[in-house]
Image (tube, rainbow, N blue to C red; front, side, top):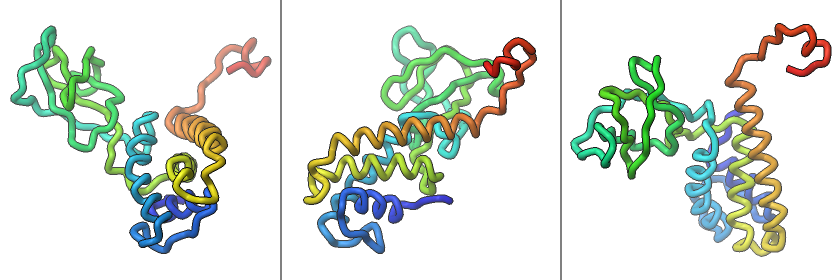
Length: 190
């Protein structure tokens, strides 16, 4: 199932004992607090891992800025880039050495294609929605009367949910390993 802003805010409010909302812009104080925390939490949670649902690829256009010392080129990153996952040249065949400086990627390569995490993801898989709801709950807990005393518990639940979501994401991204060693296969070490 894919989750949206309102369902995640409702889950966070439920976790801290607040009243749910029918729309993310509802006027109750707890809903306003959750909506304000949601935008920060989305950007933060997306930047923590190379999530497959938020991964985009783009060939960068050379910028007008001069590169930083030690680099030949400066490439402006896409406006929705939260985190660069890889940078490659020759159509993605060869990874390149790079550094980030502000909103630009510095490299010696004359053409660059990047894989990056986009901030434009709006529908989230279950595991990530759980992470995001725990993060919003963590941020709003001090402002919602019933949830203020449990901030440490919310942090622990956020970290556990994050670990689970990372594993689930990575398992979906990578095909099963093929074990060719009978020694390892018999011992189930693969």
